[in-house]
Length: 291
DNA sequence: ATTTGGTGTTGTG
DNA sequence: CACAACACCAAAT
Image 1 (cartoon, rainbow, N blue to C red):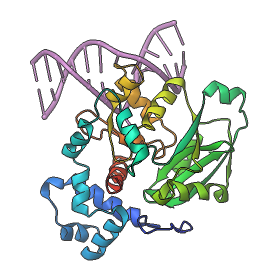
Image 2: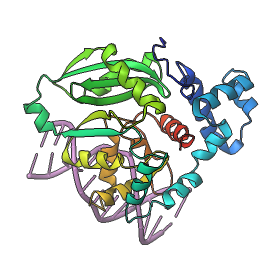
Image 3: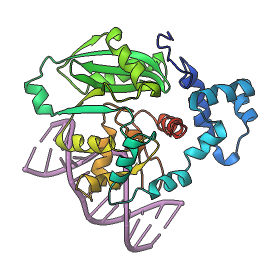
Image 4: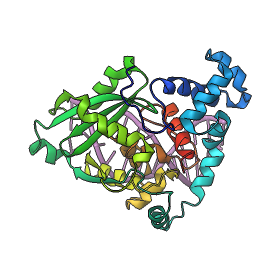
């Protein structure tokens, strides 16, 4: 648990806060019907109640209660409502001119098809490193053209598995651990204070045509907003392909930056997440406080 | 509430 | 080339 990432402001925690926080979230969502009190939760995970309240609020900018509110189906439905089929273009304009910015991270991306990188990019070198993040240990992977992968692990014990998951996606690439190289990306990505235009974050998307189209649509979803799989399907011109869209979203290699966590089912249910539903909830709750 | 049938794309053999 | 798997969805039990 080395905490080499000291973030510049206090909205983001260091180190193992996420462990505590994810425990709370898991508990909160599992027996939310019982409306467990803060005391009860604190007792269950063996922490002092006021300390817990403080940790959680520092992490999310939201009290546990408000957090729970922010990830209910009702709330999700409300957000979906002004999704407005015609296009998110309206909110696009809005996002650029107002503080509720779109493209929160100011990403520029380029796409690379599997064929392209197989022929042209054999021996493509990918450098990687783990860093602390608000959502646990984050694995960042970069090429000389930009960020190509972002994955998560609950703790250090889970790191090898995350690494395997990611390296398996690009057999043939050469992998080198290089945390010095990945560190600046980690800082930039997880500290909203760094989300400014200027030097946009360079991302390289490696995937099939269809996947790229889906991922590009995901980038259009503003911070704090949600989108259904079927709506995404409509936007890429394959209105009946919502299921295929779901699969593509699930294979997004640059999670969080390409906001796959903002895609949910039409009912408002969160449905699924490659790195665990609890983490998806955590991201949405965290974002809810930052709109 | 649960089941069922219709989906588009991808990975496997 | 076929076939199963999938972070879905709507309509019919």
